[in-house]
Length: 149
Image 1: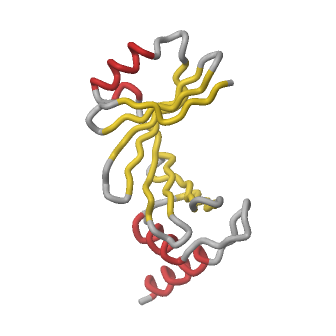
Image 2: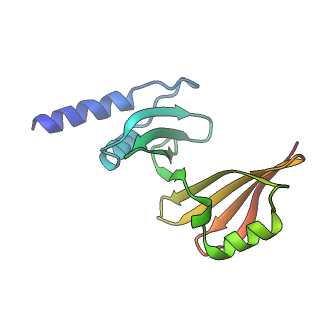
């Protein structure tokens, strides 16, 4: 019973905390889902913008982010991922089309949506542009975004 009361107070506290970049408050559904799903999360920080709410935290020493709609529905979660662990066909495509030293690898992120489908995002940079590639779980590579400098 004591644990239930503490959990309820924690959910209420999360549900009423204000964000630094907006005056919106996190939805009760998002806070409830987060606190029940990520029970070992540490250094939890909520933020929001016009499109979604984001929770950044550490879990078992790994930096993660979870995204919710403003109504508290789970969009998905993201975490850093090792480039060499991408699907083999994606590695071959990327290392052929975006060769080093012309392109510099910046980040690799694993994203799992609310339905449990996994995709990867690789950001690369060169003197002229920043490009983000989306890789499916099957290794298909497509350009997610391209920004000319």
